[in-house]
Image (cartoon, rainbow, N blue to C red):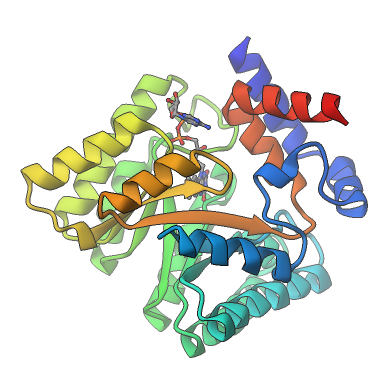
Length: 305
Ligand code: FDA
């Protein structure tokens, strides 16, 4: 049942007509729990609150699977506006983005030109940029673009997903770049030919790559709401004398805020991923796919209205 629900929401997440409708009608169906707002002003207010709680942030101007150059340019402009707001307001925040929102599916020229514009603004404002990882069909291309940009800019990282079979060799190959990587379980629907279908195998692979990347001496963001992964990392750090400034925990806005604050109080760097903008639909559907309790929350919210 849980798997069927997960598949259903992941299927919905790619529906173009619903994505378009969601943009038109604004944040609905409890999406506000996971999305900071539609404007940069709303996002800035949320980030200030989180910073006050001792949490740092990575902001994401939502957008994905864009198929025209003009829209990709507009989303790049939105990301640049977010970077400038971080600089202007003195926020403790990085930036995250998806390459399909920058024109990955359009052409190399479009995606690279948008990324270079963003990276120049990020350098000017001293903002670190993380390239999110999308579905498997875009993984190789995303890693190639990351490597190219990493040769040009120091302040860039990307994401590696524990559910993919290729991940251990990616971690090994990327070690040449000593990258700052965000490690996650993986949020897309993938075929059993490329990804572990069983949760226990994903968890095992997650622990394996956390250990590899940390013991290679690299800065590592462990992005998970799973206490067993958090505890595994803490223990690993103690056993191997890994300093607290070589890693951080990351969680999503709207999920386990109390736990986030607790970890920050324990002296760990805790970063919250804060999405905003009108292209909230696909992101919201993936959050519903991850956890049936999130669906119950949304249904309750709808019934109250
Ligand atoms: P999972 O969903 O497996 O949950 C494990 C356990 O955690 C649960 O059994 C429960 O104990 C606890 N838990 C989870 N949610 C809870 C809640 N609301 N309340 C209480 N307990 C809860 N994916 C991707 O493919 N590409 C990307 O670029 C990113 N980027 C990204 C950034 C950040 C900052 C995060 C946190 C996540 C991502 N992800 C992602 C999403 C990621 O791949 C994954 O889908 C989700 O984080 C869900 O997996 P978890 O590891 O959180 O645990």
